[in-house]
Image 1 (spheres, rainbow, N blue to C red):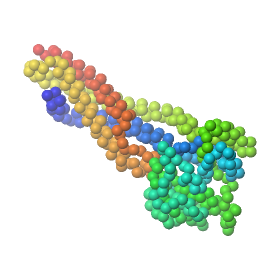
Image 2 (cartoon, one colour):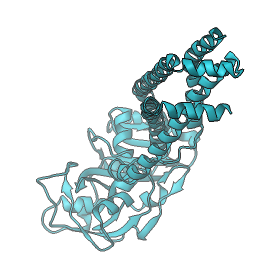
Image 3 (tube, one colour):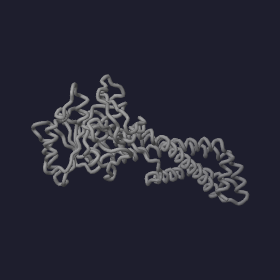
Image 4 (cartoon, rainbow, N blue to C red):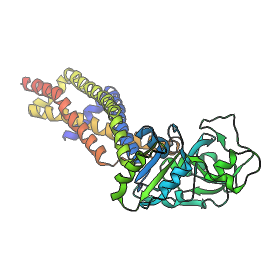
Amino acid sequence: MLLKLALQSLLDRKNSVALTCIAMTISIFVLLGVEHIRKESKDSFSSTISGADLIVGAKSGRLNLLLYSVFRLGSPVNNISWRSYQDIAANTNVAWTIPISLGDSHKGFRVLGTTNDYFKHLRYGKKKSLNFNQGNQFEAVFDVVLGAGAAASLNYQLGDPVVLTHGIGDTSFTVHDKHPFTVTGILAPTGTPVDQTVHVKLEGIEAIHQDGNITGNQLQPSSITAFIVGLKSRIATFRLQREINELQREPLMAILPGVALSELWRMMAVFESTLHLISSMVFVAALLGLAAVMAASIRERKKESQLLRIIGAPPSFLFILFQIEALLISVVSILLASTLLYASLTIAQKLISTQVGLHLSSNLFTYNSFIIALSIVSATVLVAALPAFLAYHQAKAVK
């Protein structure tokens, strides 16, 4: 009876209730959206590289080295010599290395020069290996392996030509059209920056920057941007890191990916707190609007209160009725906001993955979402207590 009466009461005030519900839906959409995107972005960043013990590059900031070597963000301050790379790769504690050369692009997508060890040893997520949707790894000097997002955005297939340009902008005045590459492989989606990357051989990078006839000896790189290191035993991690950081011949820096990523999260903490504060304030404003609408309806519902008292309803009945009405508005708003957020994520998922390189799941059934929904319901009960209490006193005054 209470539920039926609450529904009828809300329908009688459908205009004001609809506006309140819209305001609540928007605020919950923002609240859930901010939290979901924050968590998914963090998970996506954390899953970009797995199983790597060290990342080595020229001396700079730890975050800068992490961002350009792993996330393809920013630019290196300097390169490191091929000799230093070979010396460190030959260390008895080193199991494998992945050299990285950056600096070129193709239609807005970053080009990464590397070797076939990239496809063999690079891991993401929970130590997942890279797989090919089509084709295979490098064989010839001018082979290209595309990330899934780059291939989809450019609509490239195996055998298509690819011309690189110097620099990382969408436009460049230096086009390496004398040495076109050919697509020989397309990777399976990973939900990481790998999807947005154009992979070529280190020798291919050297070839496009040379004039005249090319010989095999000339294709050995003189320098690279950075390299990823996997060790035979993690016990040697700190010792090798110290040796690299103290190298006299060349100023190098070795970082632990996990430590650098933790530093990134600490820097982002203020930004995250700001987003949470803004979304929370939007929700509080919507709650206050709900309380105001319910309080304003008390005088309008005086006759309703009198009628309920005449038929024997106790004052507590009005208190509970108001609470149920507020909960109905809250639950409907949560459902609408969740549906709207799910639809938005589903529609934008591919675009975000292609343009930004982040994989945002549209699954909203998470622990954090449940806690937020529970907090919203609890806050609604608290805020609705005041108008419900006023309705209770009004009912008590009716004899």
